[in-house]
Amino acid sequence: MQNMQQNARLLAEKLQDMGRFELIGPDEEQLPLVAFRLTHDQGFDEFDIAWQLAAERNWMVPAYTLPPNAEDISIMRALVKETLTREHVDTLARDIQEACTTLDKKGGAHPAERRKIVTGSGH
Image 1 (tube, rainbow, N blue to C red):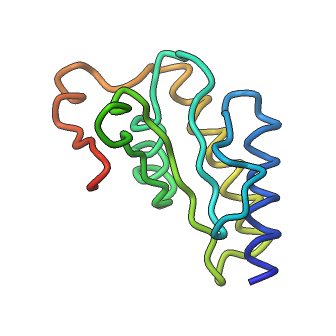
Image 2: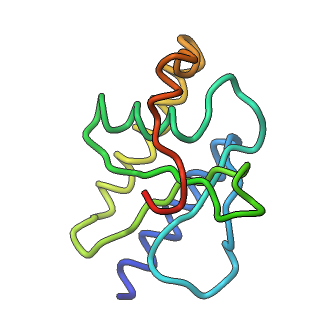
């Protein structure tokens, strides 16, 4: 458990260092996971990043909208499992940065594609 917590903290640090993300609850005691969201409009959203990571790198880092009364807020969640090594953390952080760089160039999903994206806290 200690190793998973250390890897979660490391991933959180790497995400924060990118300057694109806000960590959610970084100082709270929590499960070994990292919840985060974009700090501002960058021409794409958390769902675009999740899709880019899955399509190009086979990472499953889901994006969610929050429950009612906060459904306009989207977050991402990276669960740090026992099998996620330090090297995997480095690779995941690099892949998230590369996904954002790709999305900087091409932009987010087309409005027609965006309508197909399933949102909500139950997904």
